[in-house]
Picture: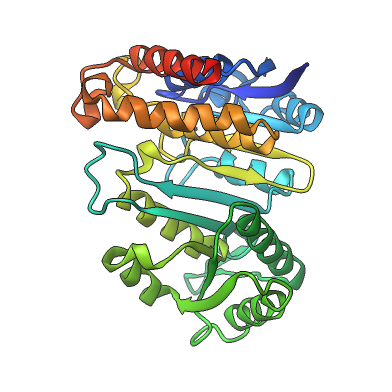
Length: 339
């Protein structure tokens, strides 16, 4: 059986890293029927729409998408397509593992953290107003009980499935007493249903400091949309950067797996981009589908290839091109599958 999935190569380095990622995912022996679609700046330039209806229709049909990085204009132009996709398909859980790979030269060794970020509301709900006369801009930080409950339940349940022992809720309830206070109160309620998970909480600014001093003391983290966006990048910095961390956007019956880094147009077409982030997202996609052995083959192969420093891409001190890295990794995946 082949899994039907929407494939969005993306902008800039997107097509290069996605080609490598598809090669690695298919090396597991798990079959996919890819429906290739456009989104982002490339789609905007060719169709006038950064998120064409054909792309939305494809995801609605397959309920599964594998996506490269997309370019979002800063300050002007169209809104983030990533955010639009998450909101359109109600992909309320953003899941970001941060695990150290060999030879990534991060500031710490052995980091192994999970972040669960609410993905559809908060400041990213996009509720903004501008008073032209008084030159005042307002953004609404919308937090709902429904949205809070479902991300918190997902975080507890997924942490249990992964064998995590501790979940830390991050908030700013000392200042944002209604929004942050409600999120924290609901977390405490739901924690009572999960006695096997140690539960605690941290204020966001303290959490940022804790992560750059003693990340080994933390296990899994759950937070609201804006705080999760910031902490996920901070955590990526602990393990080598956005180029080596994967990401999943998960709803009740639909999921999108994507690179979390930018489209890097300055190096597009040069064959030097590191495809690890989207490959790790592919590993997450395999786990989501229940293909655990295939996902483990990808994880082990990544550790193998990262241990062989010469086979890394240029950003990590190696000499491999994007496609060479993908081919080497695919060979290691096949070896693990056959073992």
